[in-house]
Every structure is written in structure tokens, then in C-alpha cells.
Amino acid sequence: MNLLLSLRQRFSNHIIRGKIITVLWITLTYTLIALFRFFETYASTVGKEDEYVIGFIEGILSKIIVIIPVGIIIGFSLVFLWERWLRKMDYVKAIFCILLFYTLIFFLFFPLDYILQSVSNSSQLNHSELLAYLETDEFKFIVLSNFIFWFIITFFIILFLSIRDKFGPITFVNFLKGKYHKPKREERIFMFMDLKSSTTIAERLGEEQYFKFLNDTFSIATPAILLTEGEIYQYVGDEIVISWITRKGINKVNCINCYYKVMKLLAEKAEYFEHTYGTQPAFKAGLHFGNVITGEMGIVKKEIVYSGDVLNTASRIQSLCNEMNTEILISHNLIKRIDLSDLQKQTKSMGIIDLRGKQEKIELVTLLDIDN
Image (tube, rainbow, N blue to C red; front, side):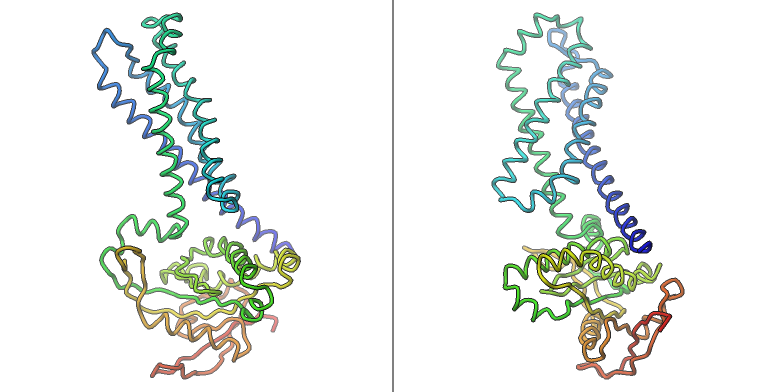
């Protein structure tokens, strides 16, 4: 029980830390854009004595005072509050709610920005002139243009977050860097995790409930994958394909720890799954490593793709779990590269196997608790 509580705390801290970093990036983005717009406006108005021109330092301070809280509030709401809720809403309702929330924030903070600028320039514009200016078409146009501009920025931030979630954080960063713009050879570990008894569960639940069951299962498993530095390569029906650069997968036994941490997270939600679906999800897994060619594939729907025999081998290793009556199978070549001392597991050879479609035989091992 203490182990599960400790594991849950680590997952929670890892997820919260990642979300806080995202909020800080959103805030930084808002701040840099606001400062850029101010520099642009200041450069176009400086030196015009007959116009209301804010001082350079005062302008920077007013922007920072206003935009940082706005960035934090919008970033926090998007990352911590809105993400799950909006996924469950109708698309039109979701857009309406975002627009309503953004409008509220805008009209709370835009007057503050203008008041700060006016106070810092009280010698140029007295109180009566300020009130008169607020009634002019020029001021209304400024409000409208600012509203539209920041709404577009907010929309693109939401779009950016959605694209990042689609690719996964590690793959998305690599995509932005152009790391795989030209195909490259690299050594990777692959783990194929397949849902046990998936056909039976699907027949009993029906298509719609089975889809929700899979979605809940994958969502609950994701923090364990991220914590162990895994990259979700593909969802193939009821199967997850996870990948690591070899050094990351070997470090802290990440590639094997990932499987057991996924299973622990699912076990913690056993009551929820039993109550909602009348069954408990469990995976069988196969792991192998080797060289692959990694690169961007496609034009219209571009993806980062791995090509190599290691994927076929890992898939076939996983397919033998039922036949060998075990939950996890690992190639002997991979297990030789891993230090299992911190895992509290021991290896058991399952023999040298002739995999279908491969000329060379491969030795497979499974893992048992040390007590066994």
C-alpha cells in the first residue's frame, strides 16, 4: 500500500510539474507578444508631441503588470481546468465557453492596462479628457482590434497544445527541431502492449462502450509512460506501441518499469473499471531492441515513422505471451543490457524460439518476483 501511495505521488508530481511548465510557457508567450506589440506601437508614435504617447519604461511596466496575470490565468485554466472538461463537451459548446471565458478575462484586464498607461501620463491627459477619449470611435476600434488579436493568439495556443498532445511531448519537440527531417539510423527499444481478452470484452460491451473502455485504459496508463520517458508511437486498436532511445529505456530500467507501473495504475482504478465496465484491463507485453530508420513520412498527414525488423520482432514476441502463459516476454539480447538489481525481479528463460518469418532463432526471457 505504501508503495502504491508513493508511486501515485510520483505520478502526480510529474504530471503537475509538466503542467506548470506548460502554464509558464503560455505566460511567456503572452508576455513576449505583448511587449513586441508595445515596441511596435511606441516606435510608430514616439516623437509626435501632439498625440498621447506613453513613456517607454511606463509602457513596459504596464504591459508586464497586466499580461503576466492574464497569461497565468488563461494558461492555468487551459491546462488544469478546461482540458478534460472540454473533451467531454460538444464542440460548438466548447468554443462558446472558451469565447465567454476569454471575453470575461479581456474586459477585466484591458481597462487595467489602459488605466495604468493613463496614470503614468497624467500630465498629458487630464481626467475629463480621458473620459471624453473613452467615448470616441478611435478608442472603441482599439478595444475591438485588441480583443480580436488576443483571441486569435489564444486560439492558436489552444491549437498548439492540441497538436502537441496528438504527437506526444517528446515526438513533438523532435518534430519542431526537424530532428527527423532527414531519415537517420538509431538504436531503439520497442514495447508492444496488447490488451488481454480484448475480443471477449469488446463483444460483451459493444462498440461504443468498448471504445470508452479503451480510451479510459490508455488515459490512465499514459502518466506511467511519460514518467518512464517513453514515447507513444502508435495506438493500434487495443494495442499500444511504446518506444525509447536505448540509453533512455535502459536508464532506471525504464522500458520494463513502464509495464509494471502501467499495471499498478490500472490496478488502482480496479473499482472504477469494475463499476463502469464490469471488467478490469490488463496487458501482455513484448520487448525487443535494435536499429531502425527514423524519419518524417508523408505529405498531407506527416508523421515520424520507424522502419526496421525490430518492430516486427517485438510484435511477434508479444504474440507469444498467451502461448507461453506469461504477461511479459523480453529478448535475451535486450535483457543483457539491463541492470535488474533495482527492479526486484529475476529472469526465467523461456527457451530459444523460432519466430515466424525470421531465419535466426531468438532466446526469450520472462520476469518473476524474486520470492518465486
